[in-house]
Amino acid sequence: MRTLVVWCPDWPVRAALPDLPRDEPGAVLEGGQVLACNHAARVEGVRRGMRRRDAQARCPELHLADHRPDVEARSFEEVLLGVEELSPAVTPLRPGLCALPVPARFYGGEEQAAAVVAERVVSLAVWDVRLGVADTLFAAEQAARRAAPQDVHVVEPGTDAAFLAPLPVEVLESPDVVSLLRRMGLTTLAHLAALRPSDVHTRFGAHGALLHRLASGQDPRLLARRDVPPELSGVLTLEPPVSRAETVAFSLRSVAERFVARLAERGVVCTALGIEVEVDGVVASTRRWAHPRWFGAVDVVDRVRWQLQGTVLPGPVGGVRLVPETVAPVGEHAPVLFGAGTRAADDERVERGIARVQGLVGHDGVLAAQVQGGRAPAARRLLTTWGEQAQPARAVGAPWPGSVPPPAPATVYAAPRPAEVVGPGDRVVGVDGRGGISCEPVRFRATGDEQWRPVASWAGPWPVDELWWDEAAARRVARFQVVGVDGTAWLMVVENGTWWTEARYD
Image (spheres, rainbow, N blue to C red):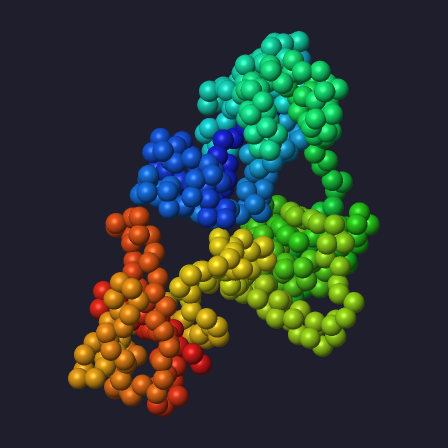
């Protein structure tokens, strides 16, 4: 059985920046480094593994986004479903890459089959899709990476080893092994394949033996078919159609209970639910609901009721369909042994209320706030769509020189407010390049329209020299904690002799 690999290059960029024009540079960051970038960014010199500041220095117009694996997987599901319409045995390798047996006999040849698959993917607005055909999965993936956009590279049967021989060892994507191979003078897959298997296993272990087989064109991995689960959707048909949301919700209770029970029988729970409402046989309302834990029968009924109440339908409801869009093993969402009392019930009511608001304003309209690493209070704020896993761009535990010590301010202003801080003789307090202050603060105004207040105590400065390598974006600031005689406490910052109020301690 020959293998066909479908590769959508730079999928993390497409998933994170779906509205970015193809001719504008974009990149996805993980841990402050470039995880993926598109062709326009590579033309400007941006490369994978490059630090954020280096990438922006080479391409100031670079559009950046944080790495969100859940969004990448969810968006690639549309491509998988589209390919499955042509061949049911699709194996997703990772978002942006999948494989399937070549349906050559059905379409009249391997190139013809690849052309049909490419046309189907392009119809989903994925313009850059590349395909590879070979005897083994590894060779087919390497062939796809050497194909032109919307084209296929076919490796003739029995020639996988010859095709792989001139490729560099870096295609094995095993940095530790590749580094050692380079130091040993083995720069191509042909050099690695020429070694005796026993010697490779002795030196590199089982992992090295697998890489040796891949380099020799003997990929032992089999395509694991993407199991399309049995019919787990729940369907409610109403005859005659019903206009009231409460009546529809009441009729849906037994369907919701069976829906949750069928999932439980397979040892999974639903964490993302699609609800389709039909009017006159046509889907009139579709919404995707996320849950921070998992959906129970009561949760399902509530979401249907809220969706009906928040949507203007063209007529009475004739049917409702429940689609489990995302499922997870029940063990990952098991309740805790303790703390499942009153507090858990309160949390459940809060979650239901937030989910209802989410149904009214949209999936991305409700955000949950968390803390990430950074120096300024505003930079430490991390907003994530309710129900999705947070992906901090900066680690909390990393050292942040110049950051203000705890406690954190309770109120952080969306935009810093103009302020004034003066010392004896109404001289403006300043900070020099070495972090020394020109004079001690005596009085201040937290905002420009407030009365002057005497300073009871103060702490600082905490100087920060940010983006010094970028002349346009460089900032040199110093932060102070200032307490007035009335007991109010403020976090203030001075930059180029100008004072601003960033936050207030409540």
